[in-house]
Image 1 (tube, rainbow, N blue to C red):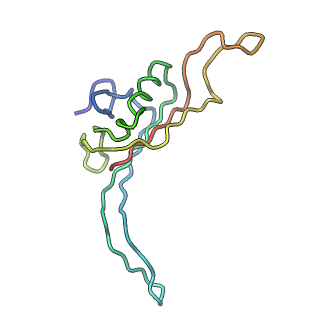
Image 2: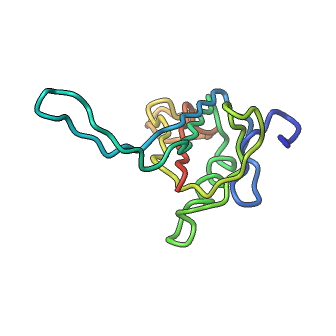
Image 3: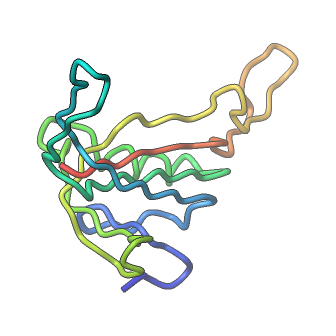
Length: 134
């Protein structure tokens, strides 16, 4: 079941902050080709592979560091992930690996002095993360 506060993704034992946007994709892997008449012949290898894409409009440095640490190191590439499955309408748990992790550094939320040095730092804007089923 989802946690309080709208948190709908849990990596290992850590609930991620409530996302600003959430997208789940279900993919089918197919071995396909076209015959000499141009018709597709295909064999479904596996269906229902989930991908979860999460975006946060803003994360503090502490939140960003916590999330990044969940995936740093060779032994953390694949994690048990609990997420809201939009097809089943329920929380599901799958082994997933992390895809690209993006923060929009052009929108780094910081204050600068007259010399261009950071005087205070609030966090990151437009942080994105993808989790893909193994």
